[in-house]
View (cartoon, rainbow, N blue to C red):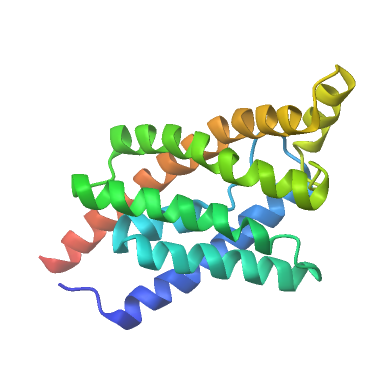
Length: 186
């Protein structure tokens, strides 16, 4: 059974909601090393490809900015777009997004995301973004690290946890989604 464009857009919209709800919940709880705001983006990019994933990532950041009343999340759409591009291309190349691929992909985006996000954070927000990682940045600054290094080290540490976990959860969701779809086909 082929997925229709309407189904793809509906699932993409649901992924945006999931990103926003998880991201705002984790941010509100100030949980260190965790964001979960790209889980929907990862799932959609792995299932439907990078273009749909990039759309989900951009819309998530745009809507988070609108809901938050400031456009502080919007510049980080570049990070979400890069994540979707990487996940989508890897899933397309290997024609799957199982746990092994998810783990490797999580490691890759754990490095790429901070390479893009750190300059945004430092240049636009002085390295502090109001999230749970700000305590780590402050501690590193207090220990003598420069702002870029403090922000980058913190982002690498948090992304190693967040992006790997997000990719593994995405692999689980995709596995269950595909099994359910194949059951429907029978």
